[in-house]
Image (cartoon, rainbow, N blue to C red):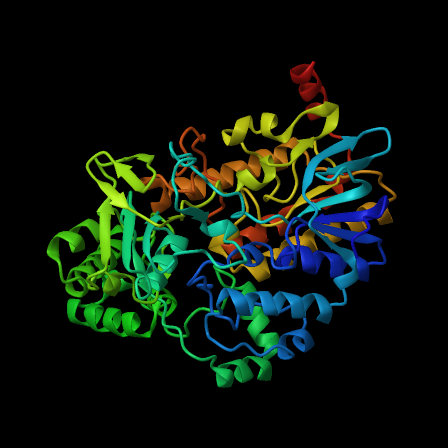
Length: 544
């Protein structure tokens, strides 16, 4: 359906895991619901991720909705780690299976959302001029879908093709088997470079900072393991919610630093051969004990130097910081790709990009002839997707202004913000987001929103929002977890350090899924029904 209703009880923005589940959940509550999504189909970022080599790095047994055993068992994955085409098939199937296909309007970009205090409702505007009024606004827009697209001088004179991994065209990219440059070595860059290394005439990977990447360990889906889950689905769900990352942990885990050196190496080799998630999941102290982190970091550094034949290239690919300080990438032969004669690593450290020319890319030290330039430059993470919508709460204050462009974020568990009544954010800034399995985190946060809305309706409260102290308390917990994390040691999108000029802040909660749930359990939700006069007065003074 393309027609947007003029008024609904709940308007959901985004049709990824959280948005699709939210539509189904609120319909189940008997509410009128509509969902708007900017893409041409469901899946959120997985509708956009179409670049060669795009693939999830979470096991398909748990990178799926598990809220209903009957829904779970009706889908059979093909691989342990689904590629982007399979993820699109899954989401197309999911909207049909949950019966929400007629409630989602695609090709709708929300540009503005304004809270009307007189009616206690939100007024939503889209890029095509449509408007919607809704009592409750649910922003399920994800955390990694606002591309970081640095402008390179000369793009208008380059005769080749420039593409960004986050907006890969649905039509064939010309000359992709020719001379290709890839800027960036995050997850997208490593995946696309690995894939193109076997097809491109010449591949140039332009790296600013070396990245730790571990073997993905993909293979056909283990249907026997999936059947074991179905045999005790309730028990599996308990394990999911009792796990720090929202997926069951290995039955046997070790403190790496406490093991004898020979046992450390044996287990690390075993994990490396089975795949990244098994390797990292074997140990309890990798990111809490500096000595354990050093052991794993040194192990991976040695692997890089053993795999890559050219010592100079191997050295450039080897990170100096501790593993886990940036998001660990999973790959299917990235280091091995540099043993191909057509694959070249260009370090941008001390050799920055200057401009695009008619025939290629000019760095400070050399000119690279190119047919295609792939920008794998990542995202304006966490706050970026929210700030792309012009969000105005009580007294007309903008969210971006209240949060000082991301420098002073405060929220109640990442779910609600004082001064923005009846607005719920799913899997965004100050949530555990990328640190917890996306489907189960989105499910949990939607359920929290559902419970709050149910309370408001039961109590006939026109609006709900958190007390200031709830947000202050949560921000303190986010900062406390971040300051004690290895991610605090380097600049990355975890803290806004990947974007020039973006304020540095802890953008995610790194205290684990269990502690996240404990926080919500500790809240007196009835306090959300009280008028928050303290903030109303302060925002009025600031805005006028």
